[in-house]
Length: 148
Image (cartoon, rainbow, N blue to C red; front, side, top):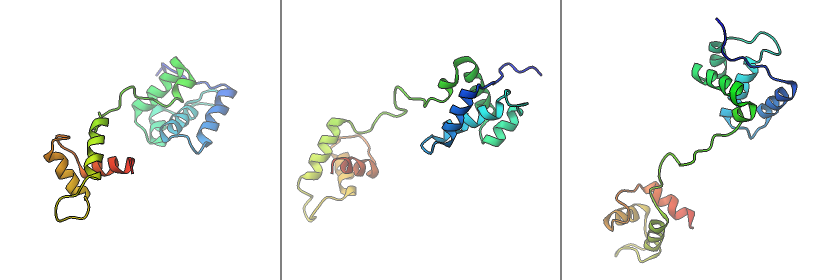
């Protein structure tokens, strides 16, 4: 079977890949991509099959194929970059104006019979006042923690 893409790393590229793998701050996904390139490198010897690389690196066959393809077409810098999302996967539940209203509510007087607000009481009150249609206690807690 003829391979469509073959990886042949130069000495400089190989050193860069090894440095990236050895760096403690390198994310796991980039480290796996580096290992894929090292296993697929034909300049050192006969590379192993993509299925075997997928098993050794604990990734899918598609991930191995895409990594090798990206290296051949777009280069090493593209493969080793961290992918940034232009938009976050989810929109934030609480906007800046909502945050201000939640903090103002928390800084205000607690309900009668209580000496201070609890996160549960704040969550229920936020929903009652329709500041946000629905919100979880953890979101309220993290919002308050963010602003001390």
